[in-house]
Image (cartoon, rainbow, N blue to C red; front, side, top):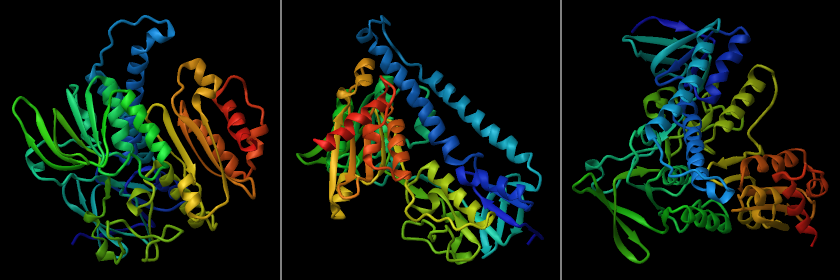
Length: 464
């Protein structure tokens, strides 16, 4: 075994939280080793937020161009150059990745080890370096930020058919003639609408009774309606059974629908059925780290594992798999370990946005969750076609919905399905963070005509 190198801190993975931990500890005078087997920046920069939202923006431009006549603008035939879309996406990715790479390499006291790390003892890792050879490193503090990857499809015939995932679909240079998507979560919805707007035929297959099963029924129904309006074929309560190749670059997917078995024919197949944690290669058992049945690292409210001094953050620990959660995890660790604070994950308000169009923003409880808790609630719901700014821009699909505690007037949560829904949601989130009663938004003065002005009307509905 090669001689070991001793550090104060080891960070495994460089997703959002793992990007900032080395900087914080290095500035505090600690000696840090960063272990990364893949591209710097993790999923968000390379395969998640940055590339997907860049491509969503291209899809929206195509959508608006086709609607030009509605606004009195003559555009002519619209087509999408998928190779150019990919090149634009890649430029954004490389810019973000290179910016992070140059920053971390210039940090004094930080060693970047490119390779696969695995535990050989509770505070000891063996790193199989990408350039050859191995390096053993030890530290009293270890942070695991290895993220997650797309879950593989497991149906009959899948080994004989090329199956795309959320990473590989973004590398296509020619447009699918007919894209079949298995999965009705946010990944399936974003790619489904995106490729329909690029010009592909799209069929979305959801095994559950409706899309976005964690949301209220009216949300799921409205999103399904929007996708169908955009030309996406949506199957719900439908289970994939078998896939096989046909001639001429086509494939056939056999599904079981509520009406019986059916064969769907397409050119490409995307599996958007969830993600699994990257923990196999870590050999967590060698360190005594406990995993749950899905392989996520188990942590307490301070993000510490059952092994003192070993922490996990981001997607690898389970829970909401969002970049902003990973960054919030980083801040908890920085507060507790460098600033002698007592931060925790308890009761933190986690928002999220699905970047379909119109956007879907959500924070706090939805109506179903509040009712299951037996809360005394009042619900306000406002269609976007009642918001002046939405009418002016021709973006009237969706609605605003807020759930309020009838006894305290506190806002418990909201869902905003509408133009810039994530931005409107953030206004309500801010009010919730400040523990303002709903009347503060009802009576607030918002610029006319803005989307935010709709909040006056939304919360006025609770007085009727």
